[in-house]
Amino acid sequence: MSSAQIEIQLIGLVVAAACALPGVFLVLRGMAMMSDAISHTVLLGIVLGFMVLGDLESPWLIIAAAAMGLITVSLIELLNNTKLVKQDAAIGLVFPALFSLAVILISRFARGVHLDNDAVLLGELAFAPFNRILLFGVSLPHSLVVMGVILLVNIAFIALFYKELKLATFDAGLAMALGFSPALIHYGLMALVSVTAVGAFDAVGSIMVVAFMVAPGAAAYLLTDRLDRMLLYAVLIGAAGTLGGYWMAHWLDANIAGSMSTIIGLLFVLCLLFAPRRGLLAIAARRRRQKWEFAQTMLAIHLLHHEGTAEAGVENRLEHLHDHLRWEPGFARGVVRRAREGGLISQSNGSLLLTAQGRQLAEQNLEG
Amino acid sequence: MEQSLAIQISDLTVAYQEKAVLWDIDLDVPQGILMAIVGPNGAGKTTLLKAALGLLPIAAGQVAIFGKPYKEQRGLVSYVPQRGSVDWDFPTSVLDVVMMGNYGKLGWVRRPGAAERRAAEAALDKVGMSEYAQRQISQLSGGQQQRTFLARALVQDAQIYFMDEPFQGVDATTERAIVELLKELRASGKTVLAVHHDLQTVPEYFDWVTLLNIRRIASGPVDEVFTEDNLRATYGGRVSLLSSAPRKEAA
Image (tube, rainbow over all chains, first blue to last red; front, side, top):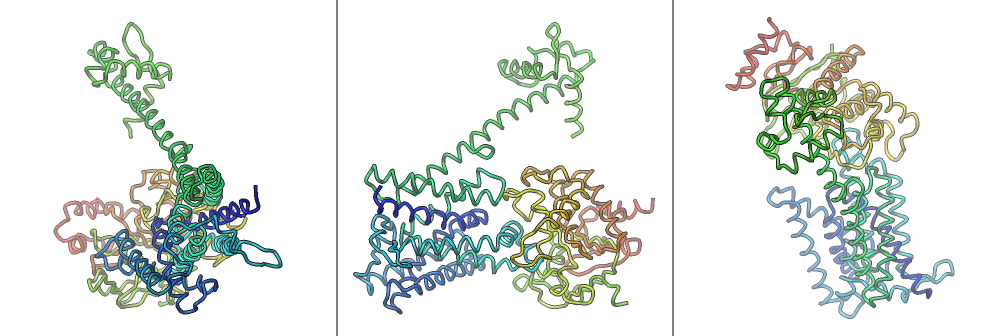
């Protein structure tokens, strides 16, 4: 591996981790699409900042962009609070307006600077190592330094306010009653998302930022029951997608950030299918098991109902389950076999008899 | 006596966009009682709790907790929101939710430690949920969710408990456990204000009651104000269910 290759992968890893951390909270707060809005409108902040400062490298641009991110969030909430527009529509109205304003400003006043639309939308990770700065005498890619600082800020913010973020996300009412301002926490998180989006879009483009923020959190949500592990898994999934995507791009000779997002998306699909308890396959298996369990309970109740009555000899036979419970013969045989194996019923001369265990099951369910 | 009033609400009006949901509420709650707040849907019961806790802006009036504004008395008040107000799929454990009751005392940034953990475990034990401490909250039944919320409120170790429908959708065992807990709280001098739906059980579970329907219809000891006339005034024509409540008490 050349040093440029290593640097590109390092930048990817730092971007993935920096995006995944606030992304977890966006996913849990049902605000995933806020990342889409912010990652686009920060461009307006950069353009306006550039027009004022005339310098594309100034750290003030990040502040301007973050401020625009917060303005985006407030505008969306303002529109939403009129109750005339739903939140998803408010997002869809605000960010294209601000983004298109940015695009107009670039094409009118900032033509020729490195703010072309392709770079904004897709980013170009392959060129990231060419833009270098000296830090303590070491020459490092500009993106790596910027994103490294942003990653540290994100880690510090989440470590410091972990309990506040958790409480405000789970139960905003209690947070407020206890004196933690949920609004302050909300805007703190949105500022984090904005700063991260600015840094990341320079490296991977504004569309990929959304994938890096939302998919790792959404995938990690399927894998665990604990918030701390969800944060860890989200970072690992983002990292795995980054490395996998880099080498896919290498082999296919394709856009690096696009390949990374693709692999992250594929990892999400894998989690969706195969997650131990929340995955689709696990859910299907659980449904199937519940179907058989429910049928066995129905059988036990049916047998209990007719037990010791005159018609028991007719009702409580395998071949009559079809008439009485409207079960297909194959299904009825399956239920009877499972119930017998589970010790719920016994069979003698074709009659089905409840065992003590079966009777208990039926009575429990009838009590409710 | 002023200082024996746990909660004093005066002239409280709450409005959503110029439409009043609570009109000019006066309410004195003495210390050491269990008070039910009853009234029809849309009467403003939850709004009353939330406004008293500063969760909603109030249009007019004052709320005093032991004679001072709520903001200065947060540590004395514990809040049990409606079970349905949170996302039970949130990735966290029962113990962790109960520990949240400690966050107010900890303040910003400080993390809960061993002492907070012990307090949470003790509270879980009190509501009979010890064995569920490590359970993911989405795997709880409705009754267990409510017990978790009550444990969280106990951890706050408050003087006043605001509870929004603590009996809503819980099983009979949990209901009895909650009633026991309420009586224990009262025995140790705490004050409970609970939104309640089941009129039949008001005289059995509570000793004071407030009848609310946008306005305060009546408030006082159950045997004085929980009368058919007041219920009729609160619920209007929809009283078919109600006449049995006072009768039951007489029987």
